[in-house]
Length: 283
Image 1 (cartoon, one colour):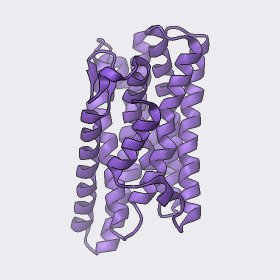
Image 2 (tube, helix red, strand yellow; image 1 turned 135 degrees about the vertical axis):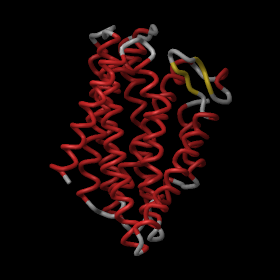
Image 3 (spheres, one colour; image 1 turned 120 degrees about the horizontal axis):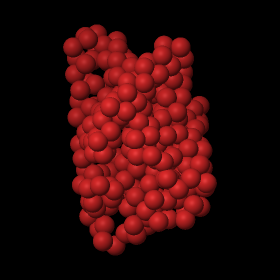
């Protein structure tokens, strides 16, 4: 399975087509979301670049960087997705309880989406092996890329949902936070690929390619959050649930496998605090 075919699978899984999203009447919102997704792609590419000259980063440093990325994702889920979703749902329905319920429904959908992708999308984790249908027909390079794509798709969807109502106070801090955490994530991926034997340029290309899912996810996030009023809080819950799933299921276990729990946890706390401050300052 090639990259294009896998992207098609992702679009089908969400029940949307990119063409429909791009031709949506809210053109400005779509442009904001696409620009936000492109910022995530650019940050991933920039983060991958040091792999041109670096072949190895100490495992403790890598775990600390990924812990920081996890902390930023946790804070973004809470402050930029779930809480605004509950607030929006309460205003739409006139009930805080029902508004929270809509967000919980969205979270459940997000978790189911990520479980489906984890089950069927071919990918490889360095320490736990190969997963997904058809992995035996997929090159090792793309198995690595797809593993990180599982991280980047919900991040892109979060950006799209954040901009879907044209609210810059939600979209901008969320985009900045996701772009910042894409820097260490891009570096960690590219360095891991170099350690696995890939050439410098191939590792940087593969690391950058994982960010392609961010603008695509942003467009899908806009589509998921428009059409009817309750779609917005549900969409925020979906993106938040998907990001929480990735942090708990993938990132934190990865940072704790190598005996570096303390630097990983310190990185997580630092990332959480940074995102919290960004949300206050930029929101």
